[in-house]
Amino acid sequence: MGMTLTEKILARHAGLDHVEPGQIINAKVDLVLANELSAAVAIKVMRQIRGADRVFDASKIALVADHFVPAKDAQSASIAKLMKDFAGEQEIEHFFDVGRGGIEHVVLPEEGLVAPGELIVGGDSHTCTYGAFGAFATGMGSTDIAAAFVLGEVWLKVPASIKLVYSGTPGTMVYAKDVMLRTVGELGIDGATYRAMEYHGSTVDELPITGRITMANMAIECGAKNGIFHADEKTIAYVRERTNRDFIVEKADPDAAYERTIAIDVGQLEPQVACPHTPDNVHPISEVVRDDLRVDQVFIGSCTNGYIDDLRVVAGILQGKTIAPNLRVIVNPGSQKVWMQAADEGILSTLAAAGCAVNTPGCGACFGGHMGTLGDGERAISTTNRNYVGRMGSPKAEIYLASPATCAASALSGKITDPRTVEHLEWTPTRERAGSRGTTVSLIESN
Amino acid sequence: MESKLHGHAHKYGKNVDTDVIIPGKYCNIIDPVELGKHALEGLDPQYTARMKPGDIVVADTNFGCGSSREVAPIALKGSGTAAVVAKSFARIFYRNALNIGLPIFESAAAVDGIESGDEIEIEAAAGIIRNVTKGTNFRAAEFPPFMQSLIAAGGLVPYVERRLAERSPA
Image 1 (cartoon, one colour):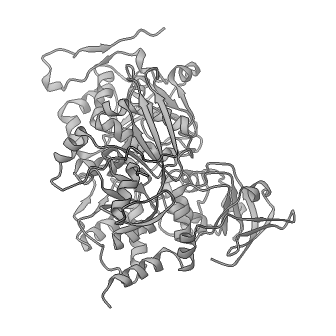
Image 2 (spheres, rainbow over the protein chains, first blue to last red):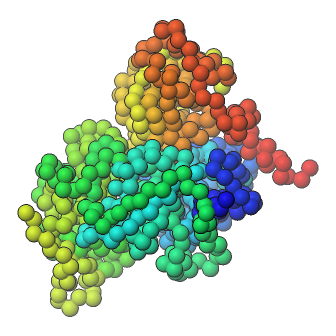
Image 3 (cartoon, rainbow over the protein chains, first blue to last red):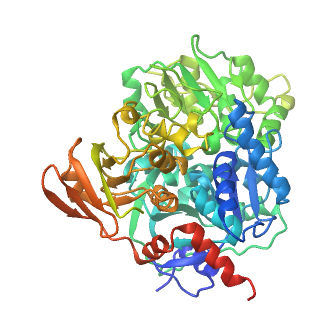
């Protein structure tokens, strides 16, 4: 019997010819990630392990300060310092302080730290993002991360795989986020618990890397251990631009065994919205707009949708316009590099001119940490990945999850809006324009 | 793990996620007792005021879904919660709970047979859950053999110490 993509990678990292779902393996890791929250606890645990003075390999650990930076208070500053001091003491090669990195899952691929066929564990549930590059990547808690810091290996139960086969070409203003929200809606928030989600089909083959990132990122929203794509020319080109490291591109065997196969046709898919209070409470935009939902905050950013392609879509909708009165729009480019690219293209000034607050890269608003927390009775539409009670602050707030396009359209009207009903210009970097406003690519009149 | 647990049940629904077990704003806290003051705050702000050390959280399916924050089971343990009994657990929470020594038990029948306020006794090693109030007994799902060996070894830290010792030249 052949192996799935996930099984192939796990077998190789365990030094085995073959693995099967349910099997417990010890697998070597290529990279261990932690942010200042998971690192603080992991470092504390590592200090308790007798004989563990040093990490297994200082070049295979990435530490990113992103959750409470710039430090929101003294307590946050001290855990960031704890991680920084540890990075110094252990001579960790890949340490990213505020101003040098950004959101961990945006930073690691950008820095060439993620390649096809690799095995990555991280002290953050959205570590599954790296499946976009054909890597096996999964989130763990701090004690497991401390063990990986020391041993350079982790114990894993080989997950059964679910094969998701996407067909059809998404329509205007329908993006990878909409496809993935629909997927979470279909599977449910525990629909893939202890499973690998393997993404297939012509739809995902056509997606840009950032679209695959969005989809792999939200595998955890189905409870999955990992989500994974096959690496193709696009993946290899992206990775090769960033690292000279050798890597092995694995492929699922033709006779691999899948627990389930789910076919999803996106040809007729509308923009999707996850309504409060679970990410699987997903409805098409046409249903959601019927409720005429006013919003207090629009948030654009996160490891799901904080990429340059996302900001270009938002800028294409907001350029030359002003956001609705009595609304705040917060934009967090995902990393320092995305921020600089967006600045260079004139996106940041375009969004600021429209009335958006542009923040420094970080996770704060998404998890209710700081820099965009919701108050009692407030409603937000957000490009992030979770809308559980209290996720972005008050337990009395409501969070709707949607694509950057839907969020930008909602920013114009101040209520949840179908992006297909607003003018959308393809973004042209400001400096490349010769006095023109760009080309109109879609304009559908609202009924 | 203490051999016998005894307390009153606090029952909740399905998909109790880690954002409500310990809201994000507290995730910069490391001290278990401080974290414990906010356990389940997002779901039931009165939980820590109402519960007594030794009490047991009972919940439906997919307990602990969402974020990988290990401070979620640490907060429950820090509050004095003795155990969680649920129909099922989310993957990362399951590992984290065992790693930090928060006893967890999987039993759909027990969850259906327990109401909030019921007096519960658990024989941890045997996985026997007793509803003293109603006079009923339930057996929790056995831990897979590998998890049993981890628990028997005293958790992940001793396991790592052993792996390190195996590697170093004698």
